[in-house]
View (cartoon, one colour):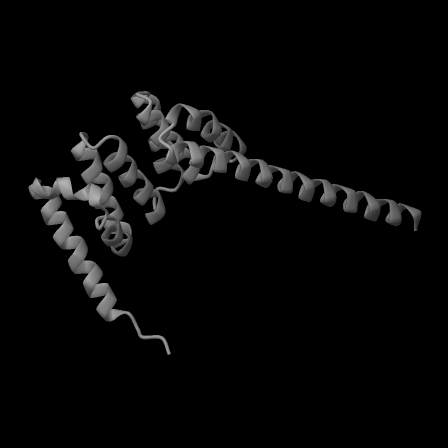
Length: 173
């Protein structure tokens, strides 16, 4: 009976420690993410870098913080490091529309001169989730691409498929 009670107490302690560590990790992540976002929003990319690096150390599998780190690196002329982060974003969740939306945003905001990579990312997003691609190309940053034949063709396909998907969706009651 005493052994059973001892095991139950130990299990309770271990579970309590795990919950405490999870809370502490989430709190730290939230703190550094907020600091990074404030600095990035104020275009203080050098200040955003250490905050996003800490976020990545806390949650290395979270694609959002990796994308934000990549964007901050690109804005501070660390292009090679930025591209490595974006490659990791792609590798972590290669079949998620959210991933490709982040990658496309990275290229349109931080490396618009790399039109092939930008259009390849947008094309991948289109094949995964045309609706997300349609919402993304509404952003004003995509207007400068309207002179590119490949973009115009891709845009037409995205909008056509999105319109088709909207028409075929069942109406919820």
